[in-house]
Image 1 (cartoon, helix red, strand yellow):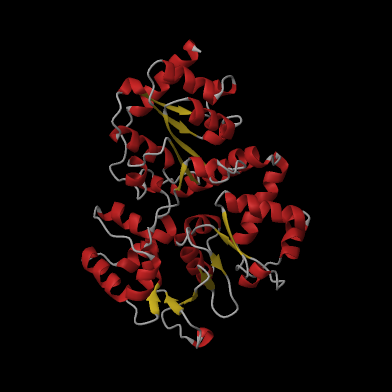
Image 2 (spheres, helix red, strand yellow):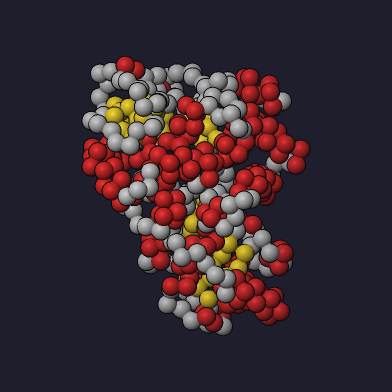
Length: 400
C-alpha cells in the first residue's frame, strides 16, 4: 500500500498545483459550508465537478499533508478498495479526501458506508449522473448535490465578469417585470437577447471558456465518453448496443418532441419497445436526454406518447444544424428547470411542479391555447420584458 499511496499522493500534488478558474459555481458555498462528513456532487461530464471540488478543498481549513485528491478511474484502484485506501491515509493523519469518478470504484456504496461508519474523515466525491444508487440510506447519510450545466445567468456572469442574482420560480412568475428590468439595468449596454442567443449555441459547459475553437468537438467527445464509459459501465451495455444508443440520440435530435412514437423509434433503432424504454432511461439518467411524460400518466389514466428532448441546446445544436426553433425553445426551458417536475399537457406545453401551465412560443404568441386556465403563462422568445402573464423566455435562465 505504501508504494501505491506515494504514487497517488504525487498525482494529487500535481493536480492541486493546477491553476483553477476564478469563477465559482452556484453550489460552491453550500458545499464549502456543509458540515456533513460525506458530501456527493453528481452531474454530467463537463459541468465542472472536479474544478468545484478542488476549489472547495483550497478553501477548507486543512494542511496540505491532511488532504489528497484521487480519481477512481486510475488503474491502481483496480487493485485496492476505497475503504482500504482511506484507512491507510487516515492512519497517517489524513482528514479530507477528494474522490473523483467514484462510480468507477468497485462497490462504492458499501465502501462509502464503511468509511462513514468507521473513519473520522471528510469525503467530498463526484459521480456521473448515470449512477444508479441502490442503497436506500445513501442520500439520508450523505449530503448530495446535483451540479447541472451552466445556467444563462452563470454564462452571463463569466462572459461579462459581473455578479447577477438568481430567483425562485414563484418570484419570476409573480414579479418578472421588475426582475427583468433589474437584470437589464445591470447588463447596461450588453443585450440580453444576444447573450441568450450565444448561450443556446455555446453556453452550457464551462470548458467553452478554455477552448472556444474546439468546443463542438469537445461536446462530441463528451457524448462518446458518457456512452462508452458511464452508460456502458453502469448499465452493462455492450459496444455494439452503444451504436444503437447513438442512433437513438440522433433520431431524437432531428425530430420534434412528439413526432416519433415509441413504435417508430423502436423500428428505426432496431430494438424492442422494452429495450428502447431501458435505453431512454439510461440516456435520461446520463443527462443526454430529457424524458417528459403526459401529465395524465401520473394517474395511469391515459395512453399517450412521451416527449423526448436532447438535454440542452448546446448538445442539440452540435448534433444537427437545422434544429426546429420550437424544439430549441422548449429544450432551453426544460434544461433551466432541471430541479422542477415537468409534465406535458394538452393545453399548453408544460405543467411545472404540478401547478403552473406554461405555453412557449414566439414574441407574438397569444393566450388562446391556455385561455381561462388558472396559473397559466405564455413564455415568449425575442422579448426583453413581459407584461402580466406574458413572460420572456430568457428570464428562466436565472433560476440558479
